[in-house]
Structure formats: C-alpha cells, structure tokens
Amino acid sequence: MGALLTETIKVGELEIELIRKRVKYLRVGIYPPHGKVRVSAPYRVSARDIVSFISERLDWITKHRKTILARPHPPIREFKTGELHHLFGVPFSLIVKPGENGEKKLNDWYTERLRVVLPSMVERWSKKLNVEVGSWRVRMMKTRWGTCNPRAKRIWLSRELAKYPLECVEYVVCHELVHLIEPSHNSVFKAHMTSAIPNWKLLQAELKKSR
Ligand SMILES: [Zn+2]
Image (tube, rainbow, N blue to C red; front, side, top):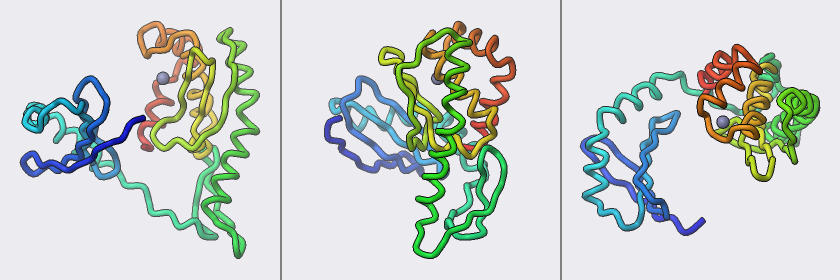
C-alpha cells in the first residue's frame, strides 16, 4: 500500500473525506455509524471532476446517509463488571477483576470460543461442499464477517462473529467456503448457498441488521 493523501472537501452541506490513492476509478462510500462519506480518487483526477462526480450522485448519497443515520447507534461500551455482552447470541454480564483489561479479556475470550466451535463447522462444510480449506483463522475485522482467498484456499473469520447466534456463524463459514467454488457473488454462488443453507438470506439479513 502506498502513501495516502487525505483531505476534506465540501459539496453543498456535505463534508467529504477525499483520499488520493493508486486506484483506477473514483469511488464513493458511506460509512456507519455517522454516515461519513469517503471518496477514493486516483491522483490524476482534478478536484473539479471529483466535485461533479459527487454532485451527480448527491441524491443517492443523501438517501443512503439517511438510512445509515436512522439505524440505532451501538451503545458505548465500557467493559466493566455487570455490563451486558453476547456470546453466540446469548446475553451475559461481564466480570472484570481488578487489574484486568475488560475489553482485552472479552476479545480474547471471543477468539477462544470461536476456536472451539469453528473447527467442526469448517470440517463439516468443507466435506459437504467438497472443498479443501488450506488454512483458516480468527481475526479482528470490523467491517467484514469473513474473507476468502480462493487461490491460497485461506479463510479469515471475524472475531465479531462470537457475538452472534451460531447459525449466523455457520452461515459465514459456509459463505466463505462456497467462495472456494465460486469467488464472486453471482448466481452460481447463490445457488450453492441456497442448496447448502436454504434460509441463508435471512441469516445474512440478521448480520446486516446489526451493523
Ligand atoms: Zn462473499
């Protein structure tokens, strides 16, 4: 990854973070929880072209921001004893002993719990789908539930998954493994998903809802 140049530009009332990087095309993204708008632009594109690119998409951006801002914001976490958290969809209250870092303790525990449930899930789905998983691991990923590198046959799963019901975890495992058959989200991918987990769209929606 090369050096990034970041600046803020304004289009009407909208503040936009502009990132210059080695990309081919202009790209706009809107991010929760505050509906931050970010544009990545190739170095050669002029500021005027960027502004007109955004202006043309202003309706879409505004609509999208509204949807994001209408979502309930995640509560502020303090990671103190008594605070409510979830493991595989089940609420529990956190216990933090003196001198312990509650957040680290919880995150380590999430990773540990996932490492207990994931091996059998990965094995079961790799057998069912008849795919070979080279390696998999649990990682801290804030924006994705999982990733798959089909060439390396490598799966990464988000530590965040530990908060959600096991059937959602199962869906993500299956999803990433199906990418070993079909890397994109095309109709072939969807057909595999439907035959593997008929209600996968519901589980996907459940995960999306929480983000
Ligand atoms: Zn995918």
